[in-house]
Image (tube, rainbow, N blue to C red):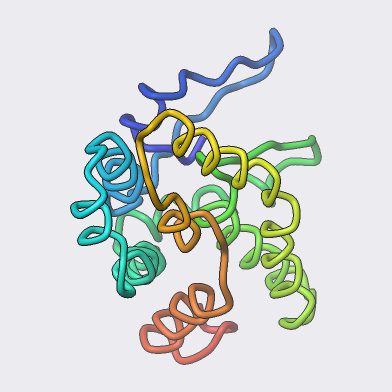
Length: 182
């Protein structure tokens, strides 16, 4: 479970079958979850526009992807990869939306086992396809509830984008030179 304590508190702890080991390994989302919740709960269209409009939501996402290289995040991603490599059992890992922290982790694992970069990238981008209906439903719900006049402000926070992945890759290359050294 890569979620932060605030995310777990909001959505609830994992419920797993008896005998399944739960591992909480929170990776900082740089406040993404709290920022999105605060924007929605403000019910203020002007404040929502100030927080998320004009490229601000995209900048929030870029900060999330750059944060994957803090010492704490790198250590937790690394330990998760070591755990995956050390078992022959099925393992489920997730964050709140299953697309950013989980998407980066999956991209790295795929690349590490020899999946070509373009294939790993395409796999990462599939989140948009698989999440589209749920994301649209959430936007409709916040509009119907009177929480947001323009729920499309949430789209950059709900999607994965090549630019987001490229932000993490650029941070990785700056720190390590290339994927092999990373």
